[in-house]
Image (tube, rainbow, N blue to C red):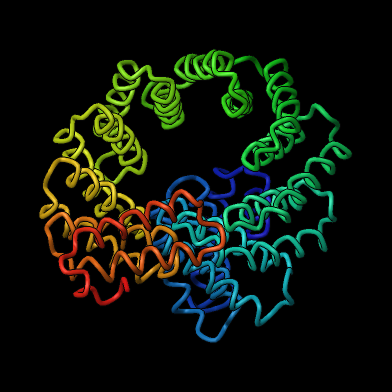
Length: 478
């Protein structure tokens, strides 16, 4: 009965499988103690079935005790951790999902060799969970083990293997390993063409992924035909409102924007927005992202009234539907604040940047780099509004975060220069001097820092030297 339930669950006959698991549990009570391996396995498989049915609280209550009752039975404990990881992932509790999945991987490693199918299951959850707090560097070795395991047991061109290969490419691009990422994007596309044909949905997905990567690397001439083909073929097969077709269309529009063909880009951006409003709703996250992105494009073109209207539409919906911890809400507020800053509406911009900082603090888990960026923009806005004293604590906090997380980064050295400038505006030259010197030296020593940024840091230092009387009092600028 248990084994039949497992087979039915694998075939997604979940309601029937659940009934069998319930019956098997009732029969086993008088036969096996609750610490017996069969009972533990049954509870895990039943819990997994409930998880797939969306009954997450029941699933957790059934599986959680297995971790304790399993004792030294590593396999039972590992399966319990796997199922609990899946449950936490569905609850979007990324940290807990990663922790449970990591424990499952570690336990399975003690029983099976790397890349074994049993190891691959929790690795799939672990790699996905690590992406959400942006821990891509930690995810990379797990993706590599997962890819090797899928290739060994399923074959290098199996759909599951190619799915992992594509995810590894995305991961590598996120951490800046662009050469290898590009090779994997292309390899996945070529393999899917061979397996499925050039116009299969999976092939078109890979074609769009490769085209998007090439666009981000500014290989626009090569990206354009790939994105055009993937968009047109998805639209032909699935209709002009197909969401994957619209993703390709959006990337295609970005190519036009990057190549300066702004009228053509705007037509495509508006098409994507109209189609998403129709296919989804105005409250859908993809629609809201598209509205925000069209507003950014229009702002760059100088169409500020419509851009402001679109930003405010997104903010109103996100405040109502998603709340203060929403990532998209913080992003759109920042975009509107920058627009208002450019229009000289400093007080309105400061209000929005403060709201962004509050959103970043409210998010769990809080992302230090995002909070630091929000604080830097807030400090700049408050300074431009004529209040360097009010700007100082925000710049100090941002510098403290970056000193801890990214001590040798361009952003950290620029923030030191910003704080130095704020202190200089308050005529606190002795405090400003070491910060401005550190900023200028640090930026000059970075390999990839744009010359414009280095020159701006030197100009700030020159202004400090001109302000100091007598110059002999300077300690660091000599």
